Amino acid sequence: MFVRSPHRIKGIVRFEGEQGLHLIQYAYRELEMMPIRPQKEVQEVLVVIGEPDALSLANETILGLIGF
Image (tube, rainbow, N blue to C red; front, side, top):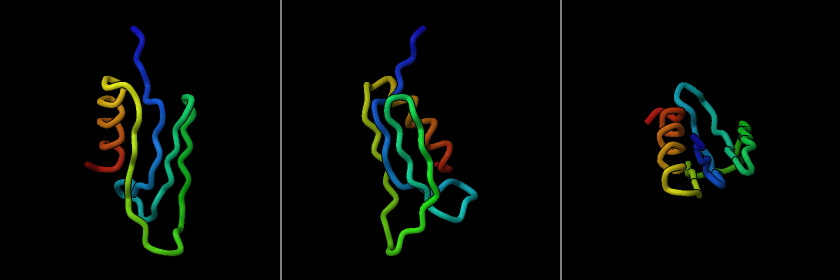
């Protein structure tokens, strides 16, 4: 069975149990997660773009990672 993945994911998140923020970028089945140290206050936000079934799976996985 073929499982679709999201087309793109981008945002700034704080992982559960971690002190700092991370920049998350996903495109073309490549995931990049980098710790960041913003020079000013930034809003934690995550945007996920893709097909509805892929979005449901991605949302559940990501929410688990960031502690929701």
